[in-house]
Image (cartoon, rainbow, N blue to C red):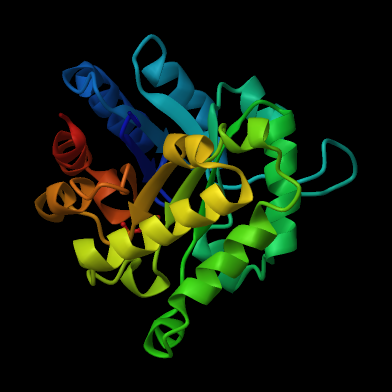
Length: 252
Ligand code: PGA
């Protein structure tokens, strides 16, 4: 059985005090959701402070991005080892904002993914189609291409340590959530791709989160789909009650 996993992507929001208060508020109540894995992904500069605020709780810490290089002259970049050094367990890779605004390709995501795995981080790899691609009937093809490119060269042993987030770009920050059926269809396709590349045992183990305007009031219907194993939450992860309301939708 796959354990539901709800992660908060705080993006470029909050200040130091706000980040610590939000993390502490979630950590304090995390034990109310023993059947769900929970994590928060604050901006880099608050990782240390948030890590300290959640120490001893079941809440996990993640980053929103990283550099594929291990170290060196890469001004402004953050390595996988730096993330584990400040207590990160997870790293979000290939978020659609990274792909669209910072022009990250599948090959870039793949290099980061291999570096994250080498550093024992759990990557949360985002895939998802644009509205124009959905309207052109290309969702399945786009997601398959992102999966193939992002996970190139990933062994079976490495694959089971990965999380995938299906985030239709048209649903991110727009309030337009995919219907449970629309999301489930893509999650099922993704699991099928994992099965073809590896095997059904591995496909059964991989958690696939849905992301895109997940809120407490739509979480349960999404999370009750057989192939939806959690959520990557943006806007609603910035309030303790909203984030934990989503976690409640995942709790069995
Ligand atoms: P949203 O963002 O929940 O605000 O739509 C999701 C995401 O970008 O991961």
